Length: 266
Image 1 (cartoon, helix red, strand yellow):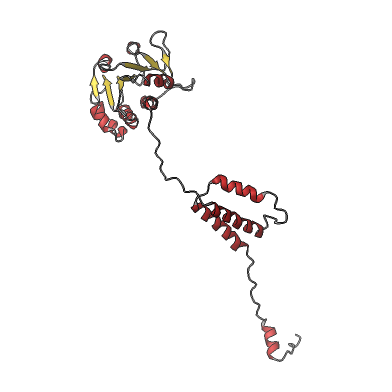
Image 2 (cartoon, one colour):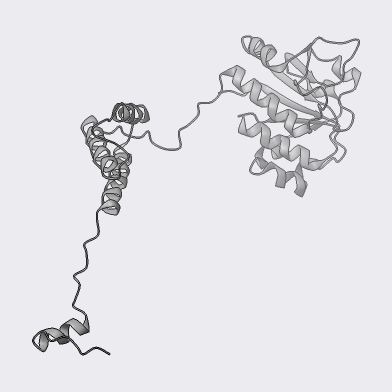
């Protein structure tokens, strides 16, 4: 996907936030970062920024520093301010998701503009934008860290542009043969009868219900083996132990050896 997006951070104070914002951008496939008069001129190269970027140091290295928001917006065709506090004048305020989904149809050269950590964007900066995006939060507590706001809007804009597929981490499990499933069911039936859980004279619907359970589970061959192993262990555990052969007591042995005479009474 091409990158039609510029992230603009205005008067940012903390180097760690710049690094974390770069990381938030990169994981969503964006790379263009512009800093408007940050508190520290070398903010993008500071150790804290590099540490928080966590692999997005290329975004930091390519970041531009400019003096004004007007310079930061050059070349963009649409700008969205981010602000939480209500204003009685200025561009309309929208929730990000529906607005960005509609905006994606136009594929503009978009600038997402974020204000200072402590105060947010000044009115004059908001007035330079087409719209104001407000992230819906709990009305009782709407405080978002700068990098968190960047991450949320980067995600919403990427989703509006089409998003990325979710890649499976494991291969899909193979389905067990139905014959193996039925053999497992029969094995369990034998084990349940042996331990007295199933009365073969009055089985009711236990086995059909177990059959439906196994079919819903869509067992893999390995899972069939496990269930057969459990049934086998039940079989072995419930098998009667062989009675140990009793050897005659010493007194009986002596009586036998002496021709059956009883020992004298004591």
